[in-house]
Structure formats: structure tokens, C-alpha cells
Image (cartoon, rainbow, N blue to C red; front, side, top):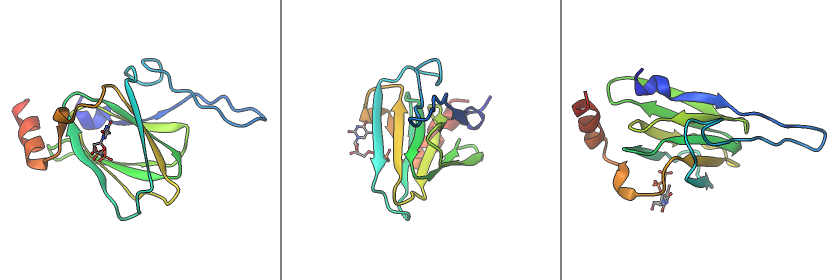
Length: 139
Ligand code: TYD
């Protein structure tokens, strides 16, 4: 299976009742990794493109807990897919070694990101040509 096929939407258990909604995301159970880090992105304008990197080690799950955004993934081998995040009980799983752009943020967007690793800037590939070289050497 190539990395584009691994990138997929996930739907999380909802425990809504007349008091409101509660969504659960448990490491290993609801997503394929244990969560070591969370961060969230908000206040990005509609014309901003974030991400634009790949990670050598880290897997992510991205959830628009408020508002919406889009995520474009690219495997560096000609395969691309676009996902819309617009429901607080769904997210996208992103495997390692996939190039990702996050864009088209709604004004109220709060994008929650769950990560399999603690932050290490050296495992981020931020240059697209370096990414192309890395994925095409791996074969
Ligand atoms: P960046 O990776 O550019 O964000 P995005 O994934 O949206 O493109 O990160 C923005 C800044 O925040 C950058 O200076 C690195 C820093 N940062 C951390 O210190 N720890 C983290 O876990 C993350 C994701 C970013």
C-alpha cells in the first residue's frame, strides 16, 4: 500500500446526549499510534498555506474541532489527494513521509493536530526537492 492510500479519513466515537457532544480519540484504539504531542492551529487566513513539509518519523491525525480546512497530500511519486476537514468527529490520518499542505482555513478554524512523536525539527523535511529525493531513494 502506498502512502496516499494510508492517508485516510477517520470517524471517531461520539457520546452525544441531551447535554451536548463528546468525541473520544484514544491512542492505538481510535488512531494507529500513541499520542506524544498535541498542538492546534487557528487564526490562519483563507489565503494561507501551512504545512508544506513531510516528516521522517511523525504520523499525525488532524481534526478541525471548529470550522473547516483542506489538506492536500502528495507522495512525491505523482499521487495526490485532497481531504476536507469540517466535522469535529472526523479527522485525517497522515502517515510519515507524505508531503502535506493545509489551506482554505475558515475564519473560525481550529485545527487540532495529534502527533506520534515529540517535536524534533530535524525530522521535518521542509524542502520539496529534498522530499522528492528522499522518497525516490527509498524504493
Ligand atoms: P510549522 O511546522 O511551520 O507549522 P505548520 O505545521 O502549520 O506548517 O511550525 C510553526 C512554528 O512552531 C515553527 O517555528 C516550529 C514551531 N513548532 C514547535 O516548536 N513545536 C511543534 O510541535 C510544532 C508543530 C511547531
